[in-house]
Structures are given as structure tokens and as C-alpha cells.
Length: 264
Image 1 (cartoon, rainbow, N blue to C red):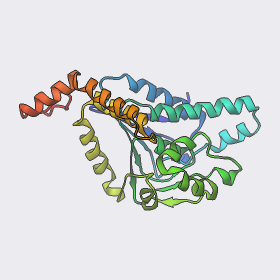
Image 2 (tube, rainbow, N blue to C red; image 1 turned 60 degrees about the vertical axis):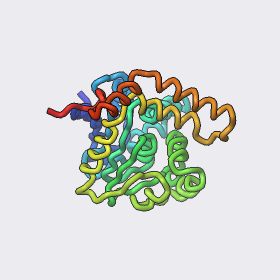
Image 3 (cartoon, helix red, strand yellow; image 1 turned 120 degrees about the vertical axis):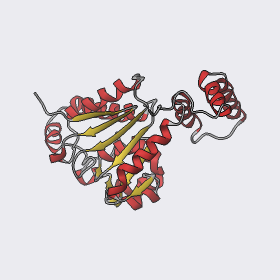
Image 4 (cartoon, rainbow, N blue to C red; image 1 turned 90 degrees about the vertical axis):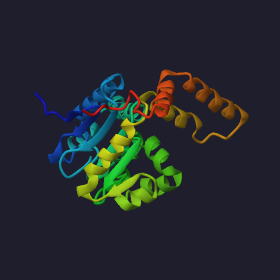
């Protein structure tokens, strides 16, 4: 039986996913990629899970591609390489398209594919000693499958620099360019992530999913009459739904809405 490359820890309405190859800095091999993709897809329709947190066991978040896997792929056919790359691309898409809020808890280095995992998440909180890099060109490769997510996170201008230099940047630098939302000291990382989790649990799950869809629909589009009409229609539909009615009732009655986890 192979190693358990992903550990799933359920804490109430929150699924904590741990990359579990600490001796190899959580490098991405075929097994980890497939296992994490299956977990992410399974969580899509799990009503018990409201928020997903992704992190790494040990000192690193994710050091990118597994060396042994890279050796095998170096001798593989083009079709085999394409299939492998498609599996990795499917993983990033499974994270980025999750209907539930996703948080990257970056506890250490996020390199190559690890940078892709970070970029695919909605919210990124990093330890101050974390490092980030798109290292592919130093191996004669390109950051292809991670590219759409990294460029979306930091913009094409910074991508032109980081994709070509493969330089490592600090968590503070990553925050300045928009890759990381917030940097905290290592000992404060869990508390800050938990605080954001609590903020997310206070929101309506259906509305959060709709908000993510809204961002995808309006990002980088000119503000035209068509877009204005689209946004008006979206809020009109939402206002008539049960979550909106419950939210307004809870506000008027000075109580927590039904989607908020109840404390004993």
C-alpha cells in the first residue's frame, strides 16, 4: 500500500487538507496529484463542509514537482507527458473552481507547482519565512499549468519577471505583488487562519459561491450596458432566494442566521 499523500482533517464545518510528504517537502508526484484532485472534487457537494484549508506537513508548503516523477517523464512519450500535465492542470482547476472558500495556509516554501496551488486558492495567508518561486525555466521548462492562476493572481507584468528569472521572493514581497493577502509570524499563522475561517463561516454559503462566480464574470470586462444589466439581474435573483430572506430576517430579529455554526 502506498503512502498517504493527503491527510484530511475535519474540524466542524472546515476541511483541513494536508500535503503529507514532509520528507520530500511535499513534492507533487502522480499519487498526490490524483488524491488531492479526488478530495477536492468530493468536497464540492459535501454539505457538512463550508471552508477548505490547504497546507503542508513539515517545513515546506510544497516544493513543486517530484524529482523521480520528472525523471520518468523525461523518458516518456509526448502523449504521456500531456496526460500527466493534464492531471496537474485538472488539480489546479478543481481548487480554483471550488464552490467553497479555499484558504492556502503557507507554512514554508511554495515552489513551481506549489506556487500554482497557492495561486489557485481564494485566500492566501503566509508565514513570514515562506518563500515563493516559479522555478521551471532553471530546469529548461515553463510554468505552463500553473500559469493561468499565477498570472491571474499577480498580473502579467510581475509574471514576466518571475517566470523568466525563477528568483525566489519572500512572503513580504509576495504580499506586495498580490500573491499573498497577509503575512504573519509563524507562531501566529494558525490563529490568523482560524480568524479568517470564522469570518467565512459567518457568511451565507450560497452567496459566497455566487460571489465567486460574479468575480469570474466581471473581471477584466469593460463596464458596458450589458454588464450593468447582468449585475442588476444577479442581485435581483439573489434577493428572492431563501438565504437572502433568512439573512434579512436574522438581521431584523437581532439573531445569528441559520447558516452560522451554533455554539453550545
